[in-house]
Structures are given as C-alpha cells and as structure tokens.
Image (cartoon, rainbow, N blue to C red; front, side, top):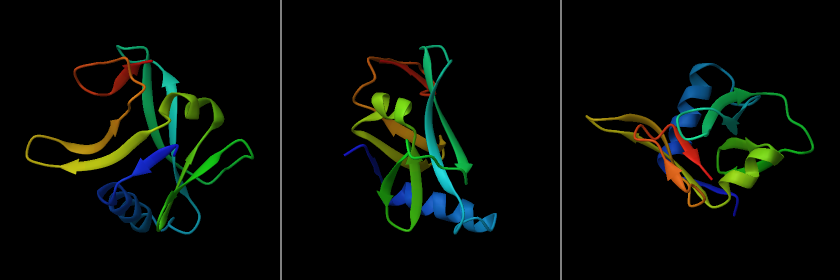
Length: 109
C-alpha cells in the first residue's frame, strides 16, 4: 500500500473540500519537496490537474493523489489528522524517514 489515510484525515479533507465547493472536482495532492531543516518536507494542496504518472490512493469518499517522484519517499506512510489542545493538523507517520525535525514538518530519507 502506498499510503493509508485515516478516518480522521478523510473527514477533514472532505470537510475542507465541501467548504470550498470542490469535493467533486479536486483531490488532496500529497507531495514531497526539498526544504525544511531535515532536507525534505511534505506539501499538501488541493489540485484538479492530474497526470498519468499520478497514483490515486483509495481514501473512501475523497481523492488523494501522489506523484511518481513523491511516492518513492512515502510508501507505507499513514496520513492522519489530529485536533487536540496542543496541536491541530495533518500528521504523517512515515516509516521511511530516517530523521525528522522537532516540529514534524520535515524529514530525511
């Protein structure tokens, strides 16, 4: 499996897309780009442009897509959403990350 999208993450993605009226036309694109204090960082954007090199992840009522290059870094990753008193946002649990920064925004592989 490329990535797992938890129920909490699926719900938050759906809510955000519905709020913007884009549920039927857009997907959450998960990318890995250079940057951050550990060398690589995750980028999450809503996108309506897809290519043959994209992989669509089975995420129930929402679409999640990953480009071919990013897929190499995130195989086996879990995308979750947390909303607690201390933190709120999408969280990645990536078994390929050899190190991560303290804020959880970037990683090395």
